[in-house]
Image (spheres, rainbow, N blue to C red):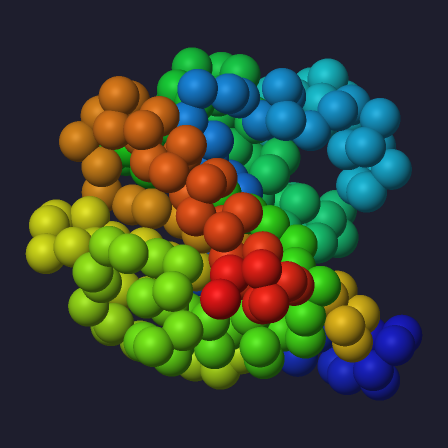
Length: 218
């Protein structure tokens, strides 16, 4: 309200949209590792104002264990002004800590794997590395069937003719860098999630080399 001059109702609607929308997939699940292993208490406090234990205590007092994933993320955004990416991080960390999901597992019981990478190219170039089939084949050999592609924000595709799929989000980091986050969904179990986590770590490294050092890949 203070920044934009919007009414309370309009500003609140914008915050709710951030909490419930499905933009770039944040690193909400990491097969084999919990959020507390990935994000230090010090970093979480720096970015959100509280560390893991403090957020867990607040969520317990609010009744978070009995709430849905969306309700928790929305509460963090609207009541505590936690940015959407970090609201998702805290939500998943809380769900893992309270036994509501295992690392690599979605709240509903399914499994997924994630990977992310910062690449020294503008976000539009990073997006095209997924959206342009000719470029994509140079670093991603497996076939995908594109579902939606919204430049330069998101890319979704079915994976290699199987039941799983990928959701990819892109975030600019200044004018000359961008971050890509891949979420591989609808996996059969923890073993497949672990395998695809390693796969995406390798493929995103190849993507980074292709875009940052194109002469080395010719």
